[in-house]
Image (tube, rainbow, N blue to C red):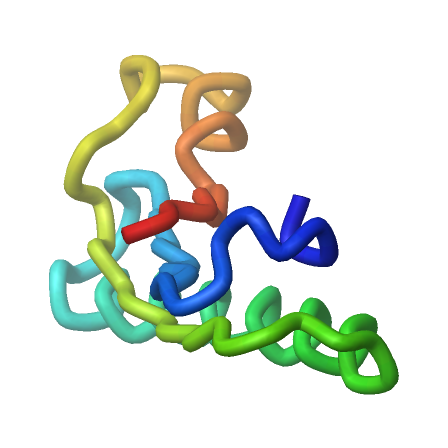
Length: 87
């Protein structure tokens, strides 16, 4: 989708998340590191491609916006993620 030109001139945001384990400050940093890692990987994959005027941003939201409850290993695993948003 990014290579199609459909999103030229738009911002691609990599939003990182964590589970609720640990401190809020620590989770914010972990989620930002996670988002930056995915952004770097995508940028490397697209380095030789013509992706127009895309802008890439990474943000960390810590344990905010969980997709499922954090009271099990499975739930914690599901909440450790990076979402790709187009703005």
